[in-house]
Image (cartoon, rainbow, N blue to C red; front, side, top):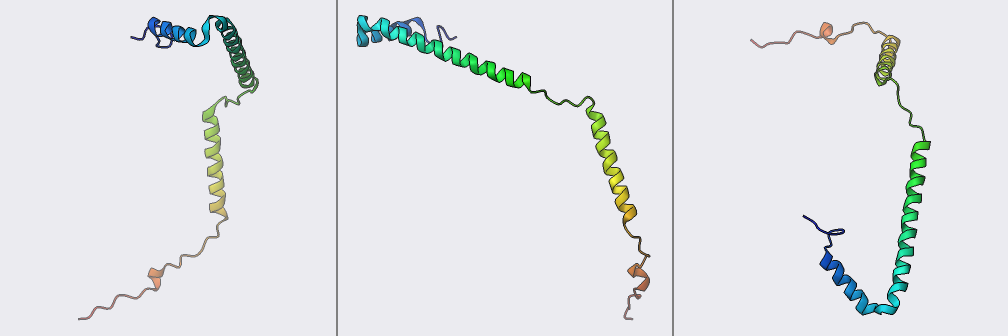
Length: 110
């Protein structure tokens, strides 16, 4: 089980704090903390603005939803059927010139 904030426990946070205190010193720590707080506020505001803009775009664009998807499929099938029927009717009919009428009987050697 993960303890603490973002998988970091109390002792890890304390260690990071001690290292920062040793590197920056007690005089610069409030200044750095203030800058870090300002940066985090700006990031949070930018994230909120981006989320709001995307939400407005998505909600503002109406999605075209077919009321009855089955009717559109039936209509497409009907159109295809009528198109194929028209093509068959428009094709000229030829007389049956089948090659079997003109073919000769196979010759067998006896």
